[in-house]
Image 1 (cartoon, one colour):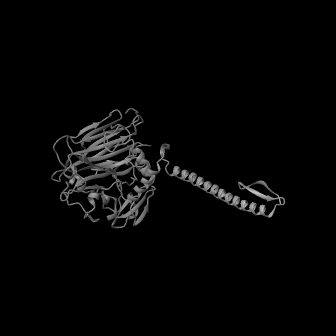
Image 2 (cartoon, helix red, strand yellow):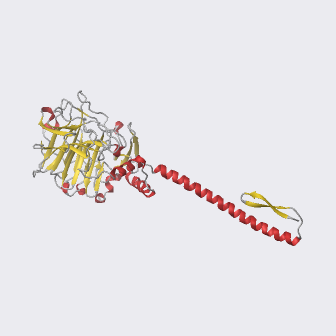
Image 3 (cartoon, one colour):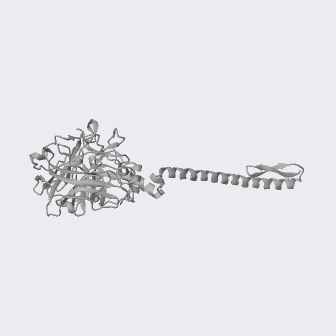
Length: 436
């Protein structure tokens, strides 16, 4: 019998018998054929595995590229992506209930004792509880007066907010963390960074000590895009420690261009907004510290909206409380344990506007978007500017210094006492220049 080779099937040789062979030769040929078939089977399986592995690599690369793509065409490394996932698990606490706002925010109602503040190593053995109140403090009658020309803005979640015993925490997404990470490569945590501009009224270098400070802040929505932001704030400080409260338009921080409440902590190793790092202890169940302001002032009209924001240091335990609204609602506090300088009273306060854009780019507007002309009807402003002295008495913040680092773009005017508006500070600016 004759044997021959014919064609290729699956990459292996297909054998065909075509003639006569002796029996011994036939047995030997069959052995060789069985061996060739085993080799062919191995080659086919090996090739199939290579194809599968190649497909897995391609698909993984596509998925990783999709998940790690960030604004401006940058990509996160696989290590950075895993770090973000880990950070999200730490920031987003288990929710007792979840709320959805009309602005697209997801609000997790987190058990008071599981809120991010208590991740701070100095607060591990705290004795705080959700019914905490600040120790009583005397206030002068004029501190409760309301301006006849402005309207208080309503604050808080609709429908009553979260259940009693829980606090509202805005859920953080991976996109939030990516924006912040790439912004932080340009922006630092301290004031006077390149690209930042200020128009503020501030206390001088006297030896005065302050138990608190605050004002009514007019609410605006200046345009900001990319890595720009525009904010109005009240800031208190002692040495390296400072806390801030106000509103800001900040696409990098929030992922939108709405006007939102914010708080900021700079103390020890903590430098962050809102609840992004441990520190600020929420006690209210209906007021997130990064909520959207639904009403925006319209200069030249009767629609001028104001949020009152005050800090008050508890004279008994040294915690710094944040109070919002015309009824001085206690939102939460920064525990004394977080601070060195502010473990004592504050020795510096400022009221005014702050903006940022990367150096060499166009500067965003501040406040209402024009240089102040001397009236709360058209200017962005702080009214009822006041401090609490070391005895807990509300007194006028007199002898303030005006400071604007570029008065062609932004400016501030300390107008002093103005009838029903109390002490008034006007500020603002049109921005626009690309000069650093």
